[in-house]
Image (tube, rainbow, N blue to C red; front, side):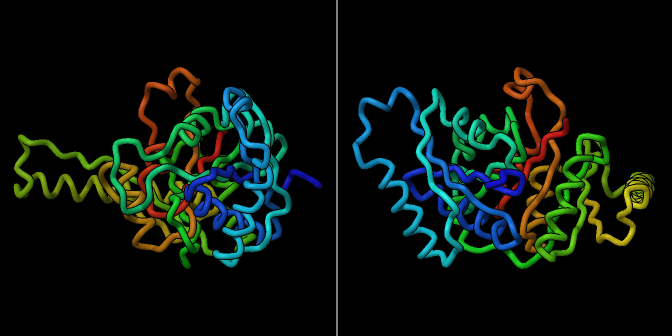
Length: 280
């Protein structure tokens, strides 16, 4: 089986895998294939029950049947030092990885992604799609491409275009600019209101120019102001976006471990799936 159009979906034994399977099934309907992988971390090997592989297969069969999804091409149990290592190895040459996150759309815990999703987003061996565990259907709206207008989104734009074409969905664009708020500014003052309107018009013009330069002049674009992850998630919810696509800044592994990331914060916050695409 060619891996070029194959998605690897990470399987847990809890409910976390169900949302990931929904997205994987959606990708498969557009001509891709899906392989399910559960990674057995090396420390657990002496304690694993003999029917582990069978239990994983039964879980997938039951979930796909209940969710009315196409069957997964194959299901395998891999052993690796860490779960993210096993998924990365399984995804060599594949289209990408689909993984569930820890928190559902209605929950607001301190940790939303889960350890495996967080590590995969730091390493980004392939495009990674992070899915809320309670997702039961793909929303009817567009593929939403979120951009800071910089080069980190170049590969993500190619990905978003190809996916929109394959799924027969429109492509939409969202850009979040600074809010430019300060406690010492009188936001009702005429001078400030005029300056803010001029700033908003400048941002709109910049986005329009960028869109035209990238062949997106006819694509609906949304310019909003404020905190990028929160505002992107809000636009995605308003548009009922099927998927949000965002590029990753070219940070090293150490920097990714300590710096905030719009992509990872968005992946933990959004009500729908978020695809994070590495830029080589």
